[in-house]
Image (cartoon, rainbow, N blue to C red; front, side):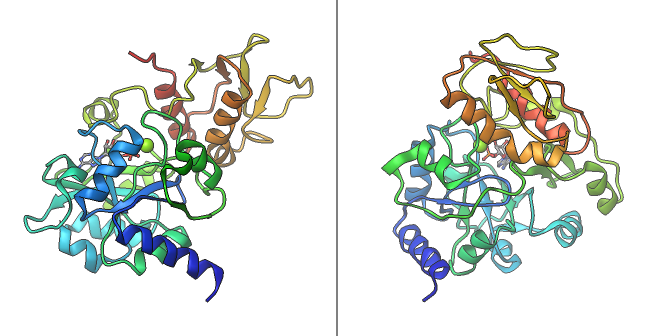
Length: 311
Ligand code: AMP
Ligand code: MG
């Protein structure tokens, strides 16, 4: 039996027994559990200290299995064909006879679903006869993990197993699109909204107002646990300074997201850099202005939430 296979079989063993495991995906690492088991889902909420009214995203590997739980529609099919598997989450109507635990949705009649493309996540989902609910594997409101070690830092021995899957390729959470009515973007991610509009042949807008109505999004989120300010030209000496491009006059409080303003690279490094700064004992963070285009929109969105004052 090759090593990868045994990792996946080990994960199945723990998941079948209603436990949570750490699962790599191309966006961030997830804390995964059987979406049909209320016992398993309660463990996710408890481990993450996640408010019960914040519904979870459920991960599938096949349309056949999704059809047991959700009502599909034309818009879904168009986007599924173009973007799946990948970093796109759909809100769909839940079927009345679905087996999804009511804790996943907080008794809502809709479900958030995704088809991850990470080979380890795909391999695991394929051998299970249930889908996996998997929010980011971090204590609620904090920075998402993008390596196996980050997940270990969050939960230590409280979880039985974490699959090794390398650094998450994208490094930011999925785009969320509501398809239960007129399509609307609820959270921006790495996918260009114009490409989604093109596939649907409809202009999609991203309105912060709608976003704020979504459960779980209207609070401090993605936070490194220390104050953060954005669009800074300079930083004080005791402040960690996050930059988009290497500077000649580098200082020990400078942290680089990219060698030369590459936004994808910056997105991939963002959460690791935030964690490193916290570990080094800094008490505050300044971030240089980040271009508001492409995945830069999603980076700025996360930084904005991270810079909110905790109530
Ligand atoms: P995460 O915090 O990355 O696990 O993202 C989950 C987010 O997806 C939640 O905070 C909600 O904003 C959104 N979400 C999940 N399920 C639903 C749903 N049924 N309807 C609307 N939004 C949802
Ligand atoms: Mg999260």
